[in-house]
Length: 431
Image (cartoon, rainbow, N blue to C red; front, top):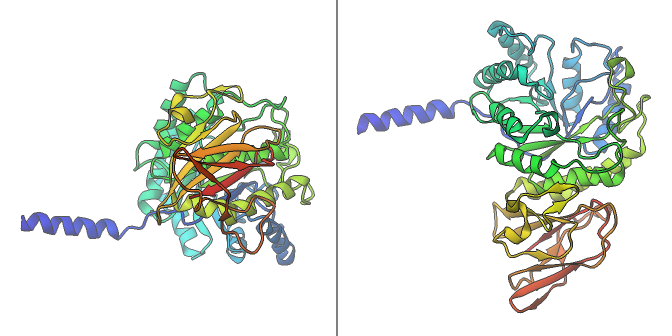
């Protein structure tokens, strides 16, 4: 028994000696990051990053299309700028050739050694590939396993294809599991893109299935969701409502990160026929910058801290038919054991429990493109004196704590009402 105890202690100390990547704050990230100058114009570059930081961007995933360098040789400079403005950066290196069937451990170790030698506080990890093709799954797993073993404190990152790139749910689930189920070869965050709105403005019929499946596949790991902020021949230029909907529905399913695709627009020379994004081709803010800045401020100050310090209990719809999608009964409010009720078919409710107190949080989302008035909710407890609501988006002041929300207790239930519920808006209630 003494030998077993010693062996256990040695094993524990050995494992404890290795750090593991951990998410400490809600991630608000970008694809096609803020541009930097080819001639190392520090003042100009700083203004570019100030613009992003003012929009509450804190995480950069690349790639950068305005760097003037397709081999990512300016990544060291980007790290310095990210550190200067208190951002985190996933580095890209042209030697990470994921498409090659052969893997060179010596090359991979040189990549690790180079970026570790910079001692940058902004260095968050390695960006491997986006929308991992099925044919590259084994290569991605191999690169991920190597980085996790040899630099475990950093994130080995990739994001997954959306469900609508597959012919069936079964084939998609096999694909997701191949990239998420093995802790030694899968990333420490589960990230995916799914752009819910079609060109004609309708919602695809598998958005909520995807959010539910990916959040469950993540398990104890965080999951991140990509948010469309540009357009092309197949995707619409997102409206304020569509941005709200995409972000807040993701958060109701427990997302701990949102990545905007894209921050800068992708130049036509790179293909894809993309339009203006959060910035235009000249680096000036578009109207979407204003929308996204408001969303990001609200997430940073109100929703993000709650989600980061809570456990998601479940996410529920009122109707089995929602935005062209048939909702699984496990996601229906009537099938849950929480006893929370509302009659409005446009409502989505994320239920969270605090890790630090007895508080319950309800993240209420208006899925509709129209405003809702006098939406009534009931909770099966006497919380009329303790029910509170957080400041709503666009109404933030120096205080972001919750205020008393009027509620009426009757017949074992507390009823409260939300008025002027804007299209796609999220409202946080606690008791």
